[in-house]
Amino acid sequence: MNRSQLFEHIKSKGSYLCIGLDTDPSKIPRHLLSEPDPVFEFNKQIIDATHEYCVAYKPNLAFYEAQGARGWESLQKTVEYIPKDIFTIADAKRGDIGNTSSLYAKAFFEQMNFDALTIAPYMGEDSIKPFLSFKNKWTILLAHTSNTGSADFQLQESKQTGRKLYEEVILRSQDWGTPDNMMYVVGATRVDKFAEIRKLAPDHFFLVPGVGSQGGDLSRVSANGMNKQCGLLVNSSRAILYASSDKDFSRTAAREAQKLKKEMEGLLNANL
Image (cartoon, rainbow, N blue to C red; front, side, top):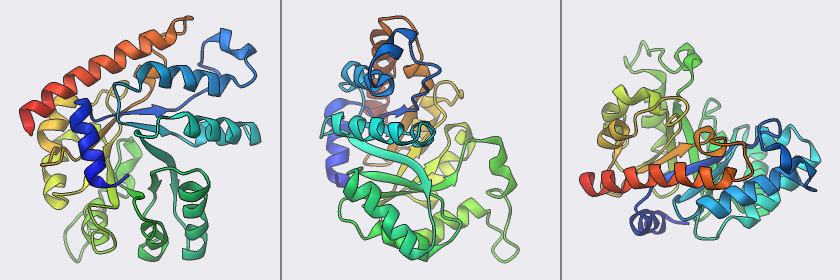
């Protein structure tokens, strides 16, 4: 999916909601455990109930890898089940030397057919370039994340430039890719920095975790982070997935997704 298609999808749905499929077998409703593949059945019902309110789904691979081969099977079935007009993100946080990155790219972009993949940029340009060579696929670099430990490195200042490490990542990486194939992860809990970060990357999309259970403020993120093509994919995971553990859990998830979509529709109208 290219950038124009993504923006058109956002406009047509009035939503920039990304739903994180962080599916934990210990948290899904108990009645699903008798299913042949409880994780996929849970995801299937969530997708059926919420796809009209979101523009992207983001499986976090740790929740699938922890289940071994069975988890990879659940993930593959989930990706294949997601409607083709919805953007798919593999939240895998990969990144390695060039030949290894090439194989990661093939795994997620060719074998599993994800639209995008999250990448850790610590190893630099040659670890990122292989991902950027795939047409209509997206590399999403970790920039300023929402976890408390992000301060350990991301906020360290360069003695040469005076810029923080996350700022260096955003500025330098723009020489590697373009707004058509590269996004940045910017946590919603960093809302006080959003306007500054948007100035560093005015045309790129940001993937924004931290709205919902982590307490990020959607209206402030949107006011400070939107660009002329929206430029935001705001993720919510637990607040939607685990809104209910009853048999009608998917209906409750749909209500939560619809609430976010409705708020986003108003913010799109106000800011674009």
